[in-house]
Image 1 (tube, helix red, strand yellow):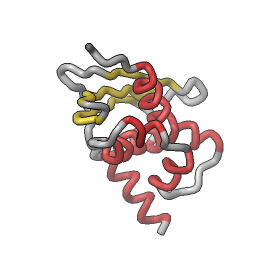
Image 2: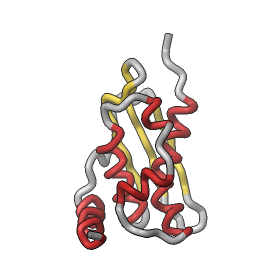
Image 3: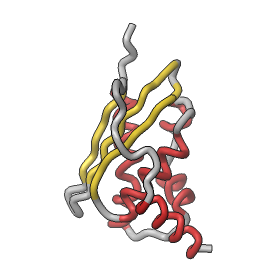
Image 4: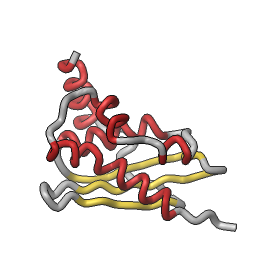
Length: 125
């Protein structure tokens, strides 16, 4: 089973979904992992507390970049409450492989960027 997850990770790394930039995002956030140099940025358009459009960009290892792509698929069209409730265990379940502490930081980088961006989001009145 872990082989299938590794293949999915490689596919998301080679052919990332939602990689790029949005024209007019209303949520932007970025994170950097100083221990390995991985970087991710997150952009989204929220409409009525739901992510209707999403994009990411970044550089780094297979884990950080593939997880960002997989997380974008997971959270698109989801409400903020669902996204803010996601945990490290949810990310590990999504990618389906056992990770050591350093690789776990890579896997969680995008989740932290997203949750920080949503936490700081201020709707335009």
